[in-house]
Length: 248
Ligand SMILES: C[S@@+](CC[C@H](N)C(=O)[O-])C[C@H]1O[C@@H](n2cnc3c(N)ncnc32)[C@H](O)[C@@H]1O
Image (cartoon, rainbow, N blue to C red):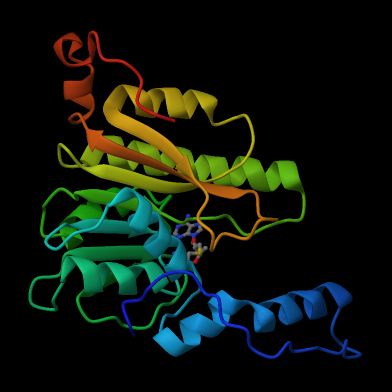
């Protein structure tokens, strides 16, 4: 893996895929797009398990979230592109793992990363994540979770917004003071209240759509930096009085 520098401007040959008798036209279109995607090609060269790795690299390039020594929780980690980037940048080792990923899908082992095969919505998932970090609070909570798509836009939006909401809850309960939160959301109105809640607990809240996120995808990312302390503390009026909204 190169640890890699950003963007994927290569110009390989365009691959055409014929619709096979058993394959639907939509699957053929997906396959053709996948095979011709420069980020997919680049991930093969750089040794990343997913093109998603470049989204995290591009977000980090803009917002400087990652640095050596940070403890990180990665929600919805499979197949593990973000975990690869994280282990590399925070310098996590098998002796002292600083990165914990969770997904209900199987993931191949990654050195320096504790991978939990589990549904994050399970009641005991938060405790399992913190235990995997040796009882330490994470400095960074990331969520790239997306519910499997149904094709019904409103349903997909609601389900992914629910994952976003539970991820916020985990972050507000567990983050170390000064920590940061990054999560995928779908474009749409329902998360406004959630953003307002985040602004009360973090110094700054911003939206970002990295170039690696496909233009036609409704996804974008919310990045909240400068966590002001856990829930109990943020309810303390001395901490919230007079503090303005962060950037958006
Ligand atoms: C876009 S993929 C993540 C890609 C990953 N960031 C990478 O770099 O390889 C979204 C992941 O979220 C996971 N996911 C969705 N809902 C989940 C849940 N309730 N608990 C755990 N994982 C979940 C899916 O299984 C899927 O692997």
